[in-house]
Amino acid sequence: MAVTGARPRQRLSRVDWISVALAAIAEGGLAAVAVEPLAARLGASKGSFYWHFENRDALLTASLARWEEQYTAAVTAENTRTGADPVQRLRLLIRRVTMLAESDSVYVALIATADHPAVAPVLKRITEQRIEYTMALFRDIGFGPRDARYRSLLAYSAHLGHTELARSAPGTLPRGRADREAYLQHVITALTTL
Amino acid sequence: MAVTGARPRQRLSRVDWISVALAAIAEGGLAAVAVEPLAARLGASKGSFYWHFENRDALLTASLARWEEQYTAAVTAENTRTGADPVQRLRLLIRRVTMLAESDSVYVALIATADHPAVAPVLKRITEQRIEYTMALFRDIGFGPRDARYRSLLAYSAHLGHTELARSAPGTLPRGRADREAYLQHVITALTTL
DNA sequence: AGAAGACCATACGGTTGCGTATGGTTCTTG
DNA sequence: CAAGAACCATACGCAACCGTATGGTCTTCT
Image (cartoon, rainbow over all chains, first blue to last red; front, top):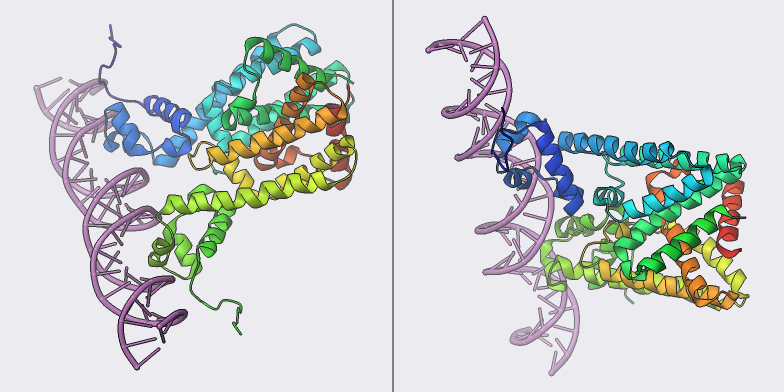
Protein backbone atom coordinates (compact mmCIF):
# COMPACT_ATOMS: atom_id res chain seq x y z
CA MET A 1 0.00 0.00 0.00
CA ALA A 2 1.35 3.34 -1.09
CA VAL A 3 1.82 5.74 1.76
CA THR A 4 0.84 9.31 0.97
CA GLY A 5 1.96 10.92 4.16
CA ALA A 6 2.61 14.50 5.08
CA ARG A 7 5.48 15.40 2.79
CA PRO A 8 6.93 12.19 1.47
CA ARG A 9 9.25 14.17 -0.79
CA GLN A 10 8.23 11.80 -3.49
CA ARG A 11 8.52 12.60 -7.14
CA LEU A 12 6.38 15.35 -8.50
CA SER A 13 3.73 15.34 -11.17
CA ARG A 14 2.25 17.97 -13.45
CA VAL A 15 -0.65 18.27 -11.07
CA ASP A 16 1.63 19.15 -8.19
CA TRP A 17 3.04 22.04 -10.14
CA ILE A 18 -0.40 23.18 -11.22
CA SER A 19 -1.64 23.14 -7.67
CA VAL A 20 1.20 25.17 -6.32
CA ALA A 21 0.85 27.55 -9.25
CA LEU A 22 -2.80 28.16 -8.45
CA ALA A 23 -1.92 28.69 -4.83
CA ALA A 24 0.68 31.22 -5.90
CA ILE A 25 -1.82 33.03 -8.11
CA ALA A 26 -4.23 33.23 -5.22
CA GLU A 27 -1.60 34.80 -3.03
CA GLY A 28 0.43 36.95 -5.35
CA GLY A 29 -1.32 37.13 -8.67
CA LEU A 30 -0.09 35.96 -12.02
CA ALA A 31 3.34 37.37 -11.46
CA ALA A 32 3.83 34.97 -8.59
CA VAL A 33 3.93 32.10 -11.03
CA ALA A 34 7.68 32.00 -11.36
CA VAL A 35 9.49 28.76 -11.86
CA GLU A 36 12.27 29.15 -9.36
CA PRO A 37 10.15 30.31 -6.43
CA LEU A 38 7.61 27.58 -7.07
CA ALA A 39 10.36 25.02 -7.19
CA ALA A 40 11.67 26.21 -3.87
CA ARG A 41 8.19 25.97 -2.48
CA LEU A 42 7.99 22.37 -3.57
CA GLY A 43 11.43 21.58 -2.36
CA ALA A 44 12.40 20.77 -5.90
CA SER A 45 14.45 22.41 -8.63
CA LYS A 46 13.92 23.79 -12.07
CA GLY A 47 15.12 20.54 -13.49
CA SER A 48 11.94 18.93 -12.32
CA PHE A 49 9.77 21.68 -13.67
CA TYR A 50 11.16 21.70 -17.16
CA TRP A 51 10.68 17.99 -17.32
CA HIS A 52 6.94 18.32 -16.79
CA PHE A 53 6.34 21.55 -18.70
CA GLU A 54 7.53 23.15 -21.83
CA ASN A 55 7.97 26.51 -20.16
CA ARG A 56 6.40 28.90 -17.72
CA ASP A 57 3.58 29.76 -20.05
CA ALA A 58 2.57 26.15 -20.38
CA LEU A 59 2.18 25.93 -16.64
CA LEU A 60 0.11 29.08 -16.62
CA THR A 61 -2.20 27.84 -19.32
CA ALA A 62 -2.61 24.45 -17.73
CA SER A 63 -3.34 25.99 -14.35
CA LEU A 64 -5.96 28.32 -15.71
CA ALA A 65 -7.58 25.52 -17.64
CA ARG A 66 -7.84 23.44 -14.52
CA TRP A 67 -9.20 26.32 -12.52
CA GLU A 68 -11.75 27.10 -15.19
CA GLU A 69 -13.10 23.57 -15.18
CA GLN A 70 -13.53 23.27 -11.49
CA TYR A 71 -14.67 26.77 -10.84
CA THR A 72 -17.29 27.47 -13.47
CA ALA A 73 -18.67 24.00 -13.48
CA ALA A 74 -19.26 24.15 -9.76
CA VAL A 75 -21.19 27.39 -9.65
CA THR A 76 -23.70 27.07 -12.45
CA ALA A 77 -24.21 23.34 -12.07
CA GLU A 78 -25.00 23.70 -8.43
CA ASN A 79 -27.44 26.46 -9.16
CA THR A 80 -29.21 24.64 -11.95
CA ARG A 81 -29.80 21.69 -9.69
CA THR A 82 -31.77 23.82 -7.31
CA GLY A 83 -35.33 22.95 -8.15
CA ALA A 84 -36.72 26.27 -7.03
CA ASP A 85 -38.51 28.72 -9.29
CA PRO A 86 -36.38 31.16 -11.31
CA VAL A 87 -36.78 34.06 -8.93
CA GLN A 88 -35.56 31.94 -6.07
CA ARG A 89 -32.75 30.60 -8.21
CA LEU A 90 -31.64 34.11 -9.03
CA ARG A 91 -31.67 35.07 -5.39
CA LEU A 92 -29.65 32.03 -4.52
CA LEU A 93 -27.21 32.72 -7.32
CA ILE A 94 -26.61 36.28 -6.25
CA ARG A 95 -26.18 35.28 -2.66
CA ARG A 96 -23.86 32.42 -3.50
CA VAL A 97 -21.76 34.38 -5.91
CA THR A 98 -21.36 37.28 -3.56
CA MET A 99 -19.95 35.00 -0.93
CA LEU A 100 -17.65 33.34 -3.43
CA ALA A 101 -16.32 36.57 -4.81
CA GLU A 102 -14.91 37.51 -1.46
CA SER A 103 -13.18 34.19 -1.07
CA ASP A 104 -11.92 32.98 -4.44
CA SER A 105 -8.75 34.95 -4.80
CA VAL A 106 -7.73 33.28 -8.02
CA TYR A 107 -10.75 34.80 -9.67
CA VAL A 108 -9.85 38.21 -8.31
CA ALA A 109 -6.28 37.81 -9.44
CA LEU A 110 -7.39 36.92 -12.93
CA ILE A 111 -9.63 39.95 -13.15
CA ALA A 112 -6.63 42.03 -12.24
CA THR A 113 -4.67 40.56 -15.14
CA ALA A 114 -7.46 40.44 -17.68
CA ASP A 115 -5.16 41.57 -20.45
CA HIS A 116 -2.68 38.74 -20.21
CA PRO A 117 -2.89 36.54 -23.31
CA ALA A 118 -3.34 33.41 -21.23
CA VAL A 119 -6.00 34.96 -19.04
CA ALA A 120 -8.10 36.91 -21.51
CA PRO A 121 -9.75 33.94 -23.24
CA VAL A 122 -10.53 32.24 -19.94
CA LEU A 123 -12.08 35.34 -18.49
CA LYS A 124 -13.98 36.05 -21.66
CA ARG A 125 -15.42 32.58 -21.65
CA ILE A 126 -16.59 32.48 -18.08
CA THR A 127 -17.88 36.03 -18.26
CA GLU A 128 -19.98 35.35 -21.31
CA GLN A 129 -21.18 32.07 -19.92
CA ARG A 130 -22.28 33.62 -16.68
CA ILE A 131 -24.03 36.53 -18.28
CA GLU A 132 -25.72 34.08 -20.56
CA TYR A 133 -26.84 32.00 -17.65
CA THR A 134 -28.13 35.00 -15.75
CA MET A 135 -29.93 36.24 -18.80
CA ALA A 136 -31.70 32.93 -19.16
CA LEU A 137 -32.78 33.25 -15.57
CA PHE A 138 -34.31 36.65 -16.20
CA ARG A 139 -36.06 35.31 -19.26
CA ASP A 140 -37.48 32.48 -17.21
CA ILE A 141 -38.75 35.01 -14.76
CA GLY A 142 -40.67 36.57 -17.58
CA PHE A 143 -38.67 39.49 -18.89
CA GLY A 144 -38.40 40.12 -22.60
CA PRO A 145 -35.13 39.39 -24.40
CA ARG A 146 -33.92 42.95 -24.42
CA ASP A 147 -34.87 43.56 -20.82
CA ALA A 148 -33.35 40.29 -19.71
CA ARG A 149 -30.13 41.22 -21.41
CA TYR A 150 -29.93 44.60 -19.79
CA ARG A 151 -30.75 43.19 -16.40
CA SER A 152 -28.19 40.45 -16.61
CA LEU A 153 -25.56 42.93 -17.73
CA LEU A 154 -26.31 45.21 -14.84
CA ALA A 155 -26.38 42.31 -12.41
CA TYR A 156 -23.05 41.00 -13.57
CA SER A 157 -21.51 44.44 -13.55
CA ALA A 158 -22.67 44.91 -10.01
CA HIS A 159 -21.16 41.60 -9.10
CA LEU A 160 -17.82 42.39 -10.67
CA GLY A 161 -17.79 45.80 -9.08
CA HIS A 162 -18.63 44.40 -5.71
CA THR A 163 -15.66 42.10 -6.02
CA GLU A 164 -13.43 45.01 -6.85
CA LEU A 165 -14.79 47.07 -4.02
CA ALA A 166 -14.06 44.31 -1.58
CA ARG A 167 -10.49 44.57 -2.72
CA SER A 168 -9.85 48.29 -3.04
CA ALA A 169 -12.09 49.74 -0.36
CA PRO A 170 -13.57 47.04 1.83
CA GLY A 171 -14.37 49.64 4.42
CA THR A 172 -17.19 51.00 2.32
CA LEU A 173 -19.00 47.67 2.16
CA PRO A 174 -21.61 46.68 4.72
CA ARG A 175 -19.82 45.06 7.60
CA GLY A 176 -22.08 43.42 10.12
CA ARG A 177 -24.06 40.29 9.45
CA ALA A 178 -27.37 42.12 9.48
CA ASP A 179 -26.14 45.00 7.37
CA ARG A 180 -24.78 42.66 4.75
CA GLU A 181 -28.04 40.81 4.63
CA ALA A 182 -30.06 43.98 4.25
CA TYR A 183 -27.81 45.22 1.47
CA LEU A 184 -28.08 41.94 -0.35
CA GLN A 185 -31.81 42.21 -0.07
CA HIS A 186 -31.69 45.69 -1.51
CA VAL A 187 -29.56 44.59 -4.43
CA ILE A 188 -31.82 41.70 -5.25
CA THR A 189 -34.81 43.95 -5.17
CA ALA A 190 -33.22 46.60 -7.33
CA LEU A 191 -32.21 44.03 -9.92
CA THR A 192 -35.41 42.07 -10.12
CA THR A 193 -38.17 44.57 -9.58
CA LEU A 194 -39.98 46.95 -11.88
CA MET B 1 12.54 84.35 -26.69
CA ALA B 2 12.65 80.74 -25.63
CA VAL B 3 11.81 78.37 -28.39
CA THR B 4 9.75 75.38 -27.31
CA GLY B 5 9.64 73.50 -30.53
CA ALA B 6 8.70 69.94 -31.36
CA ARG B 7 11.41 67.95 -29.59
CA PRO B 8 14.08 70.40 -28.60
CA ARG B 9 15.89 67.66 -26.70
CA GLN B 10 16.23 70.16 -23.93
CA ARG B 11 16.91 69.20 -20.36
CA LEU B 12 14.23 67.28 -18.59
CA SER B 13 12.21 68.10 -15.52
CA ARG B 14 10.36 66.02 -12.94
CA VAL B 15 7.17 66.75 -14.79
CA ASP B 16 8.52 65.26 -17.99
CA TRP B 17 9.22 61.99 -16.22
CA ILE B 18 5.83 62.01 -14.55
CA SER B 19 4.10 62.56 -17.84
CA VAL B 20 5.86 59.75 -19.58
CA ALA B 21 5.26 57.51 -16.58
CA LEU B 22 1.53 58.15 -16.73
CA ALA B 23 1.56 57.46 -20.42
CA ALA B 24 3.34 54.20 -19.74
CA ILE B 25 0.80 53.24 -17.08
CA ALA B 26 -2.00 53.90 -19.50
CA GLU B 27 -0.42 51.65 -22.06
CA GLY B 28 1.16 48.88 -20.08
CA GLY B 29 0.02 49.18 -16.50
CA LEU B 30 2.13 49.81 -13.45
CA ALA B 31 4.79 47.37 -14.55
CA ALA B 32 5.52 49.56 -17.52
CA VAL B 33 6.97 52.17 -15.23
CA ALA B 34 10.55 51.05 -15.55
CA VAL B 35 13.37 53.52 -15.44
CA GLU B 36 15.42 52.33 -18.35
CA PRO B 37 12.58 52.01 -20.86
CA LEU B 38 11.19 55.38 -19.88
CA ALA B 39 14.61 56.91 -20.27
CA ALA B 40 14.88 55.46 -23.74
CA ARG B 41 11.47 56.84 -24.53
CA LEU B 42 12.62 60.28 -23.52
CA GLY B 43 15.89 59.96 -25.32
CA ALA B 44 17.66 60.29 -22.01
CA SER B 45 19.51 58.01 -19.64
CA LYS B 46 19.13 56.78 -16.10
CA GLY B 47 21.56 59.44 -15.02
CA SER B 48 18.90 62.02 -15.67
CA PHE B 49 16.22 60.08 -13.88
CA TYR B 50 18.12 59.54 -10.69
CA TRP B 51 18.88 63.20 -10.57
CA HIS B 52 15.19 64.10 -10.44
CA PHE B 53 13.94 61.19 -8.37
CA GLU B 54 15.07 59.17 -5.43
CA ASN B 55 14.09 55.91 -7.07
CA ARG B 56 11.45 54.19 -9.13
CA ASP B 57 8.94 54.24 -6.35
CA ALA B 58 9.22 57.98 -5.93
CA LEU B 59 8.29 58.41 -9.57
CA LEU B 60 5.34 56.10 -9.15
CA THR B 61 4.04 57.95 -6.13
CA ALA B 62 4.50 61.33 -7.73
CA SER B 63 2.73 60.21 -10.88
CA LEU B 64 -0.23 58.80 -9.02
CA ALA B 65 -0.50 61.93 -6.91
CA ARG B 66 -0.60 64.05 -10.01
CA TRP B 67 -3.15 61.83 -11.66
CA GLU B 68 -5.31 61.85 -8.58
CA GLU B 69 -5.42 65.62 -8.46
CA GLN B 70 -6.36 66.14 -12.04
CA TYR B 71 -8.68 63.21 -12.36
CA THR B 72 -10.89 63.33 -9.31
CA ALA B 73 -11.04 67.08 -9.19
CA ALA B 74 -12.28 67.18 -12.73
CA VAL B 75 -15.15 64.76 -12.38
CA THR B 76 -16.88 65.81 -9.21
CA ALA B 77 -16.20 69.49 -9.61
CA GLU B 78 -17.73 69.52 -13.03
CA ASN B 79 -20.76 67.68 -11.80
CA THR B 80 -21.31 69.91 -8.80
CA ARG B 81 -21.29 72.94 -11.02
CA THR B 82 -24.24 71.62 -12.94
CA GLY B 83 -27.09 73.58 -11.49
CA ALA B 84 -29.69 70.95 -12.27
CA ASP B 85 -31.77 69.16 -9.65
CA PRO B 86 -30.24 66.10 -7.96
CA VAL B 87 -31.95 63.54 -10.16
CA GLN B 88 -30.62 65.24 -13.24
CA ARG B 89 -27.21 65.54 -11.66
CA LEU B 90 -27.17 61.84 -10.96
CA ARG B 91 -28.15 61.03 -14.50
CA LEU B 92 -25.43 63.29 -15.78
CA LEU B 93 -22.88 61.77 -13.45
CA ILE B 94 -23.67 58.25 -14.50
CA ARG B 95 -23.57 59.15 -18.14
CA ARG B 96 -20.35 61.09 -17.81
CA VAL B 97 -18.61 58.48 -15.74
CA THR B 98 -19.58 55.68 -18.05
CA MET B 99 -18.00 57.46 -20.96
CA LEU B 100 -14.88 58.22 -18.96
CA ALA B 101 -14.43 54.69 -17.73
CA GLU B 102 -14.00 53.45 -21.23
CA SER B 103 -11.39 56.01 -22.02
CA ASP B 104 -9.23 56.66 -18.97
CA SER B 105 -6.85 53.76 -19.11
CA VAL B 106 -4.80 54.92 -16.16
CA TYR B 107 -7.82 54.41 -13.97
CA VAL B 108 -8.32 50.94 -15.37
CA ALA B 109 -4.66 50.12 -14.87
CA LEU B 110 -4.82 51.22 -11.26
CA ILE B 111 -7.83 49.07 -10.58
CA ALA B 112 -5.87 46.16 -11.93
CA THR B 113 -3.09 46.85 -9.46
CA ALA B 114 -5.20 47.78 -6.48
CA ASP B 115 -2.95 45.89 -4.11
CA HIS B 116 0.22 47.75 -4.86
CA PRO B 117 1.27 49.82 -1.85
CA ALA B 118 1.52 52.99 -3.88
CA VAL B 119 -1.84 52.45 -5.54
CA ALA B 120 -4.00 51.20 -2.69
CA PRO B 121 -4.28 54.49 -0.81
CA VAL B 122 -5.02 56.45 -3.96
CA LEU B 123 -7.72 54.06 -5.02
CA LYS B 124 -9.16 53.91 -1.56
CA ARG B 125 -9.38 57.67 -1.41
CA ILE B 126 -11.05 58.24 -4.73
CA THR B 127 -13.37 55.30 -4.23
CA GLU B 128 -14.58 56.53 -0.88
CA GLN B 129 -14.87 60.04 -2.13
CA ARG B 130 -16.97 59.03 -5.07
CA ILE B 131 -19.26 56.80 -3.11
CA GLU B 132 -19.64 59.60 -0.64
CA TYR B 133 -20.52 62.01 -3.38
CA THR B 134 -23.02 59.65 -4.93
CA MET B 135 -24.56 58.97 -1.59
CA ALA B 136 -25.08 62.66 -1.00
CA LEU B 137 -26.81 62.83 -4.33
CA PHE B 138 -29.22 60.08 -3.36
CA ARG B 139 -29.88 61.82 -0.09
CA ASP B 140 -30.65 65.02 -1.94
CA ILE B 141 -33.09 63.12 -4.05
CA GLY B 142 -34.89 62.18 -0.90
CA PHE B 143 -33.74 58.71 0.12
CA GLY B 144 -33.06 57.93 3.75
CA PRO B 145 -29.46 57.51 4.92
CA ARG B 146 -29.48 53.72 4.83
CA ASP B 147 -31.17 53.58 1.48
CA ALA B 148 -28.90 56.22 0.03
CA ARG B 149 -25.90 54.25 1.19
CA TYR B 150 -27.09 51.03 -0.37
CA ARG B 151 -28.00 52.72 -3.59
CA SER B 152 -24.70 54.50 -3.90
CA LEU B 153 -22.85 51.26 -3.21
CA LEU B 154 -24.78 49.45 -5.84
CA ALA B 155 -24.35 52.28 -8.29
CA TYR B 156 -20.63 52.42 -7.78
CA SER B 157 -20.31 48.66 -7.97
CA ALA B 158 -22.17 48.70 -11.25
CA HIS B 159 -19.84 51.38 -12.50
CA LEU B 160 -16.71 49.50 -11.51
CA GLY B 161 -18.06 46.30 -12.98
CA HIS B 162 -18.98 48.00 -16.19
CA THR B 163 -15.43 49.22 -16.48
CA GLU B 164 -14.14 45.71 -15.95
CA LEU B 165 -16.57 44.28 -18.44
CA ALA B 166 -15.45 46.74 -21.05
CA ARG B 167 -12.01 45.31 -20.55
CA SER B 168 -12.54 41.59 -20.24
CA ALA B 169 -15.56 40.98 -22.44
CA PRO B 170 -16.43 44.07 -24.43
CA GLY B 171 -18.47 41.95 -26.76
CA THR B 172 -21.17 41.52 -24.16
CA LEU B 173 -21.75 45.25 -23.78
CA PRO B 174 -24.31 47.08 -25.89
CA ARG B 175 -22.63 48.10 -29.08
CA GLY B 176 -24.63 50.45 -31.20
CA ARG B 177 -25.36 54.05 -30.32
CA ALA B 178 -29.03 53.39 -29.69
CA ASP B 179 -28.43 50.23 -27.74
CA ARG B 180 -25.97 51.92 -25.48
CA GLU B 181 -28.37 54.73 -24.86
CA ALA B 182 -31.21 52.35 -24.03
CA TYR B 183 -29.03 50.38 -21.66
CA LEU B 184 -27.91 53.53 -19.92
CA GLN B 185 -31.51 54.48 -19.53
CA HIS B 186 -32.28 51.10 -18.05
CA VAL B 187 -29.43 51.38 -15.56
CA ILE B 188 -30.44 54.84 -14.45
CA THR B 189 -33.97 53.67 -13.93
CA ALA B 190 -32.97 50.59 -12.01
CA LEU B 191 -30.76 52.62 -9.72
CA THR B 192 -33.07 55.51 -9.03
CA THR B 193 -36.56 54.06 -8.99
CA LEU B 194 -38.57 52.23 -6.40
C1' DA C 1 35.14 85.12 -17.94
C1' DG C 2 35.06 81.67 -14.57
C1' DA C 3 33.33 79.30 -10.62
C1' DA C 4 29.25 76.96 -8.63
C1' DG C 5 25.50 74.43 -9.19
C1' DA C 6 22.28 71.92 -12.11
C1' DC C 7 21.80 68.35 -15.12
C1' DC C 8 23.15 64.19 -17.63
C1' DA C 9 25.86 59.96 -19.89
C1' DT C 10 28.35 55.87 -19.23
C1' DA C 11 29.97 52.14 -16.88
C1' DC C 12 29.52 49.04 -13.27
C1' DG C 13 27.69 45.68 -9.77
C1' DG C 14 23.72 43.21 -7.99
C1' DT C 15 19.25 40.71 -8.27
C1' DT C 16 15.67 37.89 -10.24
C1' DG C 17 13.84 35.25 -13.41
C1' DC C 18 13.93 32.35 -17.90
C1' DG C 19 15.49 28.52 -20.37
C1' DT C 20 19.34 24.91 -21.63
C1' DA C 21 22.77 21.40 -20.87
C1' DT C 22 24.55 17.75 -18.71
C1' DG C 23 24.95 14.24 -15.72
C1' DG C 24 23.01 11.83 -12.04
C1' DT C 25 19.18 8.87 -9.62
C1' DT C 26 15.28 6.14 -9.30
C1' DC C 27 11.71 3.53 -11.16
C1' DT C 28 9.91 -0.15 -14.45
C1' DT C 29 9.98 -3.90 -17.19
C1' DG C 30 11.60 -7.57 -20.20
C1' DC D 1 19.25 -7.98 -12.93
C1' DA D 2 20.28 -5.01 -16.52
C1' DA D 3 18.72 -1.61 -19.68
C1' DG D 4 15.80 1.88 -20.88
C1' DA D 5 12.73 5.35 -19.45
C1' DA D 6 11.24 8.65 -16.21
C1' DC D 7 12.52 12.03 -13.21
C1' DC D 8 15.50 15.45 -11.04
C1' DA D 9 19.78 18.55 -9.38
C1' DT D 10 23.36 21.64 -10.53
C1' DA D 11 25.58 24.72 -13.24
C1' DC D 12 25.44 27.97 -16.99
C1' DG D 13 24.34 31.73 -20.12
C1' DC D 14 21.16 35.45 -21.05
C1' DA D 15 18.10 39.38 -20.45
C1' DA D 16 15.71 43.02 -17.97
C1' DC D 17 15.78 45.89 -14.27
C1' DC D 18 17.42 48.51 -10.19
C1' DG D 19 20.50 51.61 -8.12
C1' DT D 20 25.45 53.72 -7.59
C1' DA D 21 29.70 55.96 -8.96
C1' DT D 22 32.14 58.96 -11.51
C1' DG D 23 33.12 62.26 -14.55
C1' DG D 24 31.47 65.20 -17.88
C1' DT D 25 28.72 69.38 -19.98
C1' DC D 26 25.61 72.95 -19.97
C1' DT D 27 23.65 77.42 -17.17
C1' DT D 28 23.66 80.94 -14.33
C1' DC D 29 25.25 84.36 -11.66
C1' DT D 30 28.73 87.43 -10.11
